[in-house]
Length: 290
Image (cartoon, rainbow, N blue to C red; front, side, top):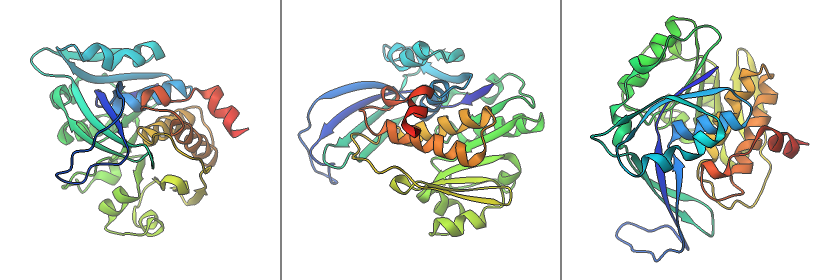
């Protein structure tokens, strides 16, 4: 079982000819609202990629709560651990997407995500994977990791974003760390991903955007190239990769094959608009890989 302890948002998206500079107003195009949040995204991505997933998090007592959970519910993610916090708003992400480059800017109002607590989680054991991100209060995420690890669960942490004050025992709490290039540099103080890979003492995956990913599992190093495409929208592509990676590992795939599977999921997510609406199913990912 994959247990996700993470954020739930509604993404409010506007596509525009370019992203605004500070102080600039840009006239955009069509508006869309999509379910989002890194925790919710990774939960749905893992479920669609063949995992068995339950999500623990919170929504507010407003009209955004239902839409934020809609695709998770349709996708079969277990939502029994999602609570409604009536006195708060559902988390919101304001997203601008550049129609020329498919790059984005994201501004998040956490709302109910700030009222999530680690003691909501049930006991986790050796058969469980706990998947964490960086959009819930860091102290609660850290508590969740320590409790799960103490009971033998496997902890996968997508450290995004990297908090300013990391605990000294972080490496002992994480079975697999997943970061992008910028997060790897913030974590290790090393600008070169290959050096960051060597500097982190535990298992780690560093995603490189259009250049694929590099990883170390134990003493083995892996480098997996990406399939080059013309992206439509990169929103949620990283979450698609993380969710698919955890789903693949939960089924016992070899790390190299799990990485290929994860990158294929991330690539497919770039070919459609929105985050959760773009996530591929396991058969679609396997067909893409040929």
